Each structure stands twice: as C-alpha cells, then as structure tokens.
Length: 71
Image (tube, rainbow, N blue to C red; front, side, top):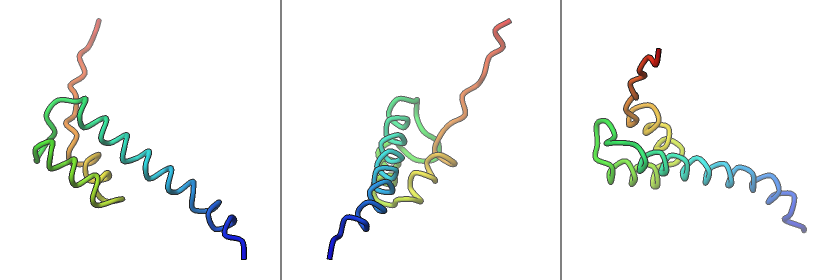
C-alpha cells in the first residue's frame, strides 16, 4: 500500500497552515502593540490553537492603522 496519494493531499494543507502561522507571527512582531492582549499571549494563542488562534489574532488582535490623507 502506497501512502503517497494520502501525503500528496495533506501536504498543501500543512504548508498552508504553516504559512498562516508564520504570516501572523511576522505581522504580530512587526506591528506596534496588539489589541486586547500582550504580544507574548497572542504568540502563544497563534502557535497553540490553529486555526482559531491565527484567525482570532487577525480579527481581534490587530490594531487598525490610521490612514492619513496625503494630499
């Protein structure tokens, strides 16, 4: 029994999950202070509770940047 068809179906999902986690962590550490919780708490939430952790950070943890009118 060959496991390659199973792995071929799961591999893109694993890559996507890692990309979302890494993207959220990069965003978290490059921006200013996150909303509602300290940065270390958001880091733990993103790493421990996939997929809800990254989604929670994106919806609740990111502060909205103010857009200035450059005119």
